[in-house]
Length: 193
Image 1 (cartoon, one colour):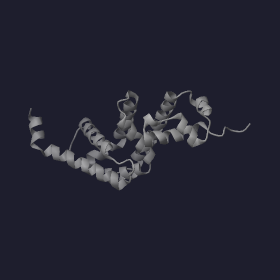
Image 2: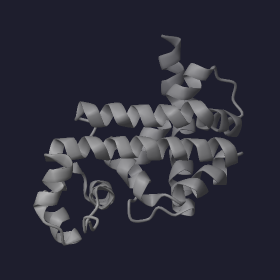
Image 3: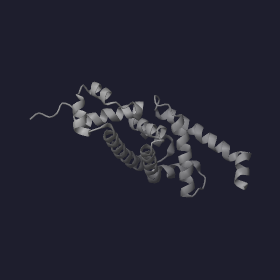
Image 4: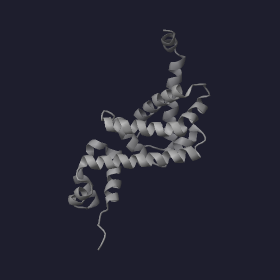
């Protein structure tokens, strides 16, 4: 018996790419079917419906995030340039995370965004961030600041330019803005209240 012309993994890989590049609102069984040259019936055979397919894409992203976290914990020694050089190697996964961030109004997307972000933050990113800042912060405050910086970063990155250099530039701009705020009279007054 011959194997199916289009495997379940091909559907998932193509769907992952579409989610990452175009967002979940543009996922279409028809578009995926045309791109793969596969009958829609094979999609329904593997997944049943689009919501179940999206669940499988989210599970796939979670596994990718775990691998990224493992790699980062092993190889990243500094925030700049190590983390950004690692991210540059996985532009599709980074764009997928960006789509989760952009579409956070969906509770499932928000939950996965937070879960993946916290996974890597706890494993290595917050420590690298604290070392870079050279400012004594407790772990909770460092994480909260990392989230603030990360959310600003995700809102500013260009999904078509995910080079390490560009991502570092955006990160440094965000950090400069945060530090400016911390030194402002407004922030001092806010902390005195």
